Amino acid sequence: MAGTSPQVYGDGKQTRCFCDVRDAVKAIISLSDNGSAIGDVYNIGSETEISIHQLAKLVNKVLGGPTYDAELIPYEQAYNPGFEDMLKRQPDTSKIRNLTGWEPEITLEDTIADIANDLGHNFLKGLNIEGNTCCWCETKFCQNSTGNCCIK
Image 1 (tube, helix red, strand yellow):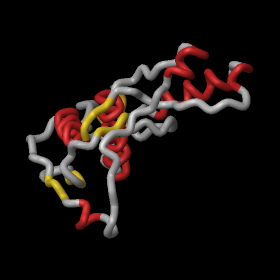
Image 2: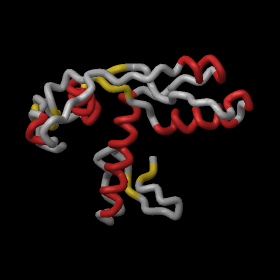
Image 3: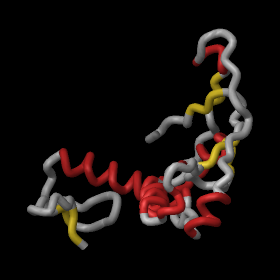
């Protein structure tokens, strides 16, 4: 996203709920540990809605770059004729919550930060610049046997 506006399809008002995969794995484990869950269907996800336009702003905020207005791209330019988007998608997770007590713990903001950090480290690690300072965490690079690209 460096130096570019995020692209948002439609008007950006459509809402979605995002769940960190680490939370989803915990949900699956909680179900597999509970015999009462066998043979039933459960929604796993976050019930916290965010508009796609707000998501673009959140990503920009977390990355700490300059603010760019989202570039709105009409559906007609991105999809085949007749495409219709759902304005709202929100899972009902009450069933898994009532059975296991599971609820997502990791915020969307933290998920975005973790992804950006991981992508940044892996990209910079690939440049083979051991000894230079990491622009993500301001530590020295060290390509050690654990695969970590920097040390604190």
